[in-house]
Every structure is written in C-alpha cells, then in structure tokens.
Length: 122
Image (cartoon, rainbow, N blue to C red; front, side):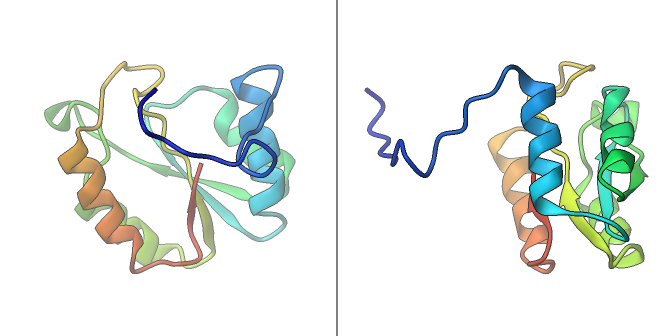
C-alpha cells in the first residue's frame, strides 16, 4: 500500500506488547558491561530493563527548550563519554512526552550515530 517491501520471515517481530519487544531487543543487543542510552524523560521501566540484561542505563537529559527531544550535540557528547554504549532507546513519538522527532532531527541523529557503528537504535 505504501510501496514498502519486507520479508515477513526475517523482518517482522510479533510480541505481546511494546515492553516485551523492547526487553527482547535489549537481550539481543547488549549484556553485562554494556551501556544503554535512555533519553529523559523516559518510561520508568526502560532503565530497569537495561539492568535486567546486565547493562547500565545512561540517562541522556533533554530540555523543555528542545521539546524534550534528543539534541544531536548532547547525544554525540554522551556517546563520546560512554564508549560501552550499545543501544540508544529512541521512542518516536516520545513516550511519555508525546514529542515527535522531525525527519530533519532524525537525520541529524543518524549523522551522529554514523560515528558510532556499534550502537543500535531500539
């Protein structure tokens, strides 16, 4: 319908809900000694999920001036300071704020992440 093609065997994941899928993603992507970047404000279970898989949550502060969206410069600095980061939790629209990262902002975030090929977006 939208011109998107996918392989239903290898590119679709079905779960009982978002929390289960996020937790399984963390289990697959990181483990003991790794770090998970969690932009604040965040859903309360996100840092706990990181701890459950043996990783350490790293809170990336956002500001009201930015609409509580990820600031690409702040993300870059955070990733420089946390070389063990394996996952960036990116919820768009944001839960709990409802803020929406624009295409332009997501492109800027992607440019930052190009410098950190070991970090996956969840």
